[in-house]
Image (cartoon, rainbow, N blue to C red):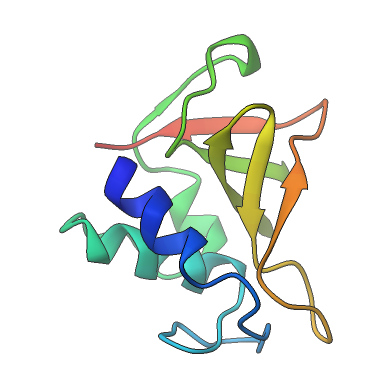
Length: 109
């Protein structure tokens, strides 16, 4: 998970492009898939597939590397300190954001 977090953080500032999976442009699930691939962990391509991976964990137990789903159709990567890294939407770039209050969280290894 640490390697995936480092990989995702190395992409800060890369543009959001719907359907892109890196290494220089990403959509939300593409960033998470690419980051975990750098750590040697294969993940499915889409948010709807990624939310079925791993095991559910409560927000109180979130750890760096956990997949965070703030709403249907969007995934972020927890980085610690109440923060996530994400490719948020068209016109924006990969960025660090606060962890939302109501989220689904999945832990993959």
